[in-house]
Image (cartoon, rainbow, N blue to C red):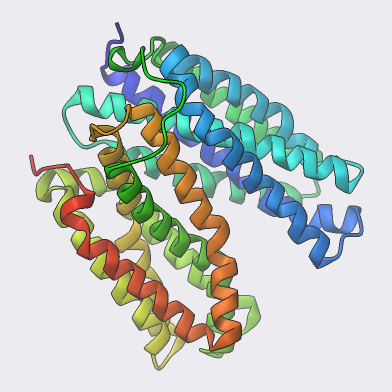
Length: 381
């Protein structure tokens, strides 16, 4: 029988922090890998698919593993493999080995992602209050720390391999500290869960909303700088301000989101978040100046910040499927959105314009707002 208290809440936060640190390690290594292996853009693009491919393969299986063996074992094993593989991203001597390493990193982080979210759902449910936004906020904090520390170490002259090893060490420390209070036993209601269930009912609906939200986030990561430089006239050196504004606003929104959800309820927060995100996308397109467009990205970050946490809570509370399998399915659909989003924006921008593509993302956020009544289960405290 799992006991849920302050220690379990802290261990869950540390697991999310570790995952954020690990995810942040790869992006600063991309230029080094490209130069070391003399990769062209097309070759690099194909290799980048390996990271997402590993996650997509592992995620549906992880729900079954947590229902059989508990969150602790799955989190620690996937975390150990993550720590092992991340430094090799900076060292892989051939494109084939880099692709294999990216696939392995994607699979291990994807497994960690699902397992820690299953733990989060159980801890939140047993605690009787909204906690999911704060958990996801620690993932964002980990991303900031990891990316900033990697950039600082590389700027100071450390080798890419040594820098990645430091990040792996921090991930290991976070997981070691979290280990004693991770949930050792499978959730009692899911011990007899089937090995595989085709996603159905509310899980498909929740997963579709997750897909839209992750799609918007992925598009901002890859296309916001281009929107600001080509449509708003910002210098290329300042193009990253859009994503920075979005990421900071999202992190702040998540760190304060639990109190907001407890006060207003998940349905209202999902409604307001969808409307706020839509307004941000439309403002980023229609703004007459770059500073106003940046305000749009802040609105997107604030609006989207609590959408995914609320949807994960809903996935854990629905009755159509065992929660662990539902979390695996919803996470997988979300990652498909991250992978598909940038490509979809590219196709639409090529056929029409980048402004129209971002306007379409605003319409997706309106769909999330319109679905708030069905997509959330958290009531006001």
